[in-house]
Length: 374
Image (cartoon, rainbow, N blue to C red; front, side, top):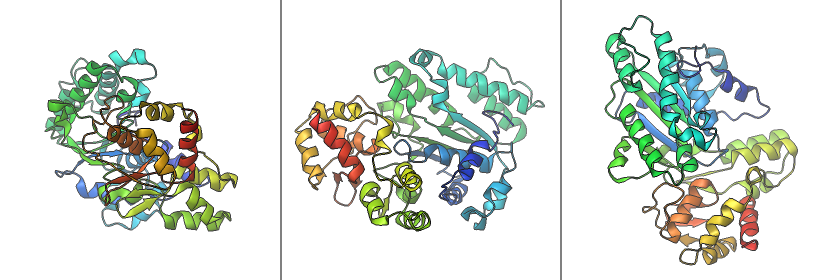
């Protein structure tokens, strides 16, 4: 068992031991379906505190050869699936939280080499019988060698994949180097059995650097078949409200409203806090100040402030999401800013109407603070 190669299941165990846990294990049934297929590369983006890390921890605990997770998954929904036993702790896993390598901006120039160094060191220990594994080689070359000599591939689980673009907003050189690293690691690689990346932003568009378009993207504007795993569903929240004797109608008003195709989901962080503390307020937005939201509104592209005021009154705003460059700096129109706010969780997108709206009371309060302070 390592930190990055074939990790343990402690993080997922902590989630299960928490006072409130909503079973999202059926996500594994989908990832099992796409193992070793052309659909094996997934980039799942959703707002902060929407369960990204928990899902990554769950996948690592399920697939990793470095632990026995049969007891953890006993009684969960995935246990009833036909593919459950076939893949339980049967795969070599590489689990990365990119943010752990970027504690400060000073790490931006060295984090890629640091990732490679730490993972390679564990791979050499994990595969002592493999020859030609040099600590000075590139990670992709080491993985190629292991695959050639053992016939064994890897499941990659990468959390906070996009934190580079949030920390290095003005460092295009770093962004491009990072995309080149990911492209080299995944594109055409036979050793990849599954690659699951998760973060806030979809994959950055950079002309020829969009070459990591091998990833199918599941996002707040296009969740495909995974919408119910992005947050809590109505049925899940109703059940918890009954259990904890909390007013469901108030819960719906405060935290529902995120439209993902045919599914509406609730903000999971806020629902859990409201259930625990028996009080309705802004829990999710309270984790950071409103200044970040105010900054985007103050840009006021094409009457952005007026659009926000209209949405606060219950209106909707037509939007073209296709020009957004999937970063936090390239803004040319109001639509670019509004699309970013969808990915950040401040707005929701009705795909059928091609329009955005404010999802609930929690977010309305945050917008009112930002508009009043402008």
